[in-house]
Amino acid sequence: MSQSAMVATDVVTSAPTSVVSMKPVVLPAPGRGEDLQVRVSAPATGGDLPIIVFSHGFGWSMNGYAPLADFWAAHGFVVLQPTHLDSRTLGLPAEDPRTPRIWRFRIEDLKRVLDGLDVVEASVPGLGGRLDRSRIAVAGHSWGAQTASTLLGARVLDSDGVPGEDMSDPRVTAGVLLALTGLGDDLTPFAAENLPFMKPSFATMTTPALIVAGDQDQSALSTRGPDWFTDPYTYSPANKSLLTLFGAEHSLGGIPGYEVAETTDENPARVALIQQLSVAFLRSALYPGDTSWRAAATALQEDPSPLGKLESK
Image (cartoon, rainbow, N blue to C red):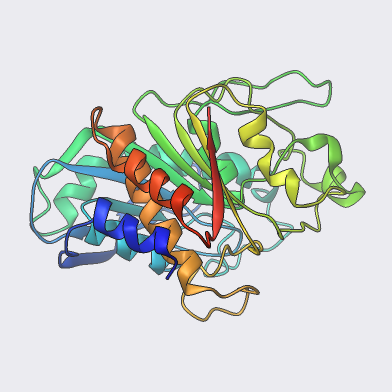
């Protein structure tokens, strides 16, 4: 582990607590074709627990991203992971009439989770009355980051370049966006034709967010290089931080899971740094006056062999 990750460990975390995890918590979803299944991970004890709603990448499910979900829950957050319609566990065929709208269903899934917090509390033994509904964050990886970004204020441009509807959610006050794709001006012909939702505007993404990009993340959907993934920081308003990870590809060292096939750049120290910095960022974003983020950022800046660089605005 890098010095910055070790220092951040001292700064932002006490000893991890025991975690309870339950799946599936089923939320009724009329019009979706499938009820929404959610995995809930929470500290076994404690109250006034902040919430993270996490959106998985393409094909994944509520069962993925254990390196993040387990860590966040062990350090004080209730983590809610819905399974979106694109999940391989559901096997939705490409010709399904819902397929062109999956990107919208994904956004509705996150909001449905927030609407269903009463059901979540009632479904998990011992969780009732322990959620702090005034402290809610969203997070996501890849397509999941695009999904989460809309709740922070990002919009999708139509074919004329006009921003679509505002799908932000005032209940959400912070975000962590991992490997979020950039502007739609540089899409490959395939992406431009088949993925019209990949034309974002970040101009109204006003909610504070930590954006994480890998400097070796070369997308097959873009004609640009890895700097494409820094667009969400460059083109969004203030109250953003950008962590650029050295040598990281799209899995950012292995956040989708332990030893999963799609991780091309496995690096436990890199994952540890994301774990620590995301906790520090969310603590300081959700609790005004908390100094975890400032301390963790200083630790990274002073690391003689850092795993990445951090900038904020």
